[in-house]
Image (tube, rainbow, N blue to C red; front, side, top):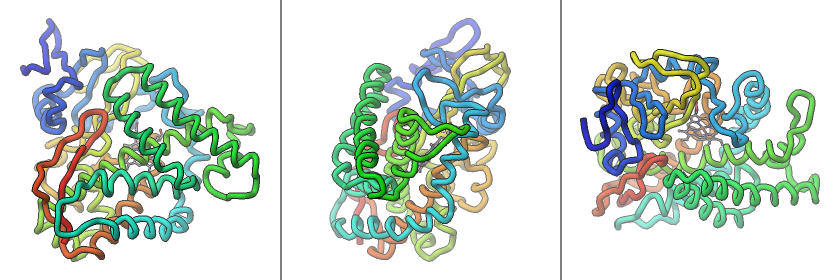
Length: 387
Ligand code: HEM
C-alpha cells in the first residue's frame, strides 16, 4: 500500500495521475505489476499491468471494444466491420513501396538536422532533435509546407498540456485547433487540384463502402496519424539517445552492426515506453487477471508495464533485442496493430544511421534527464554530448 493507493472492502484503488506515480512512471508501474495485476483507478477505469492479460485483451476485440469515446476517431475508435473498412484505406499509405519512396526524403531531413547539432558540449535532445525531427518528417510525409512546422510544434505542446490536465473540454478545443490547420490544407488542395500528389491529396479521393470519405473522417485520419507520429517518435528519439549515451558498450556494439537496427529501436522502446497507454471498453462482464470487471467499464492497456513484465522478460531492464522481439508489444498487437510501425521503424533507423555517420560517440551530458509525465512517455529533457 502506498500513497498512490487506497483500500476499499474489495479492491485497491489507484491514481495513475498522482504525483508519486508521475515522479517515475516506469518504476511505479513495475511496483504495481508485482502486487496487483489489475487495479481499479480513482477515475473508475481498470488498469491492466501484465503481458499475458494485455495480449488477451488485444486478441479479443469483441469483448474489449475500441469504441471508448463519443469523439470521432478513425480508425482507432471503431470496431469491426467499420474498423476493417477504414484500415483497408489506411494501410495502403504505409506499404513497403510507399516507404521506399519516402526513405531518401527522410534521410535528407535527418542528415540536415544532425548536421546542425553542436559537438563536444551539452545539447538537449528533445528540443534540438526529437521534436524537430518528428515534426519535419510528418510535414514531409503528408506533403505539408514547412510553414506548418511552427503551428504544429505549438499544437503538440498544447495537446500535451491538455492531455496532462485530463480536461476533456480543453482537449476538444485543442483538437479543434488542429482540425482547422488540416481543413485549410484540404481546401488549398481542392482549390488547386492536380497541384500535388501526396497522402493529404490522395485521401480526398478515398472511398469506404462505396462512398467518399467525409471531411470529418479525413481530418480524423490525419489527426490520428499526426498524434501517432509526433509524440511517439520524439519520445522514442529521447529514449534511444539516453540509452546510447548511458550504455557505451552497447552503443559500441550497435554501431558495429551486431544487431539489425529495427530490432534495436524496438527493444529500446520496449525498455523506455514512448507510448504509455491506450484504452478499451468491456462489452460484457469479464474476469481478467483474477479480477471481475462488469460490462461497460473502461480498461487501460498499459504498454509501459506489459512490455516490462518479468513473466516474459526475465530481466526487464536488460537490452536483448533478439530474444525479446517476438514478445515486444511496442506497436501493439491484433487488429489495431500500429499501421505506422513500418514508417516509425524507417524513421528511427535512418536517424540512427545518420547520427552514427556524423559522430564517433554519443556521451551523457552534465545535466540529469527529466522524466516525462503521463500521457507522455520517455523524457521531457535529455542532455548528451556528441563526439
Ligand atoms: C515510435 C512510434 C510509434 C509507436 C510506439 C506506436 C505505437 C502504437 C500502438 C501500440 C498502437 C496500438 C494502439 C491500440 O491497440 O489501442 C498504435 C496504433 C496506431 N498508430 Fe502507431 N505508433 C507509432 C508511430 C505511428 C506513426 C508514425 C503513425 C502514422 C503516421 C501511427 C499511427 C497509428 C494509428 C492510426 C493507430 C490506430 C490503429 C487502429 O486502431 O487500427 N503510429 N500505434
